[in-house]
Image (cartoon, rainbow, N blue to C red; front, side, top):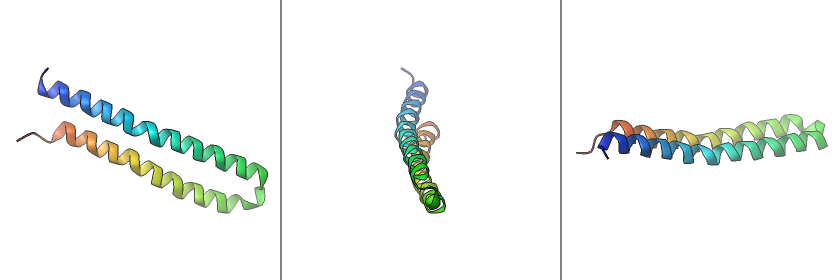
Length: 78
């Protein structure tokens, strides 16, 4: 297998696995927030603030996976 092909496959696997966790995490966070808002509508602002913070922190993991995938593609082996 050529080096470029191996890099492309590795980057795809890194991005695929790296986006799976945050995707599931954001889904679970949103599900819990919607249930909480449904049970206690008065706390919507507090729940929404915490939800946005948690989603931003979860999304950072996907950004790390993107950086790893880009490094695999564009940084040459010396």
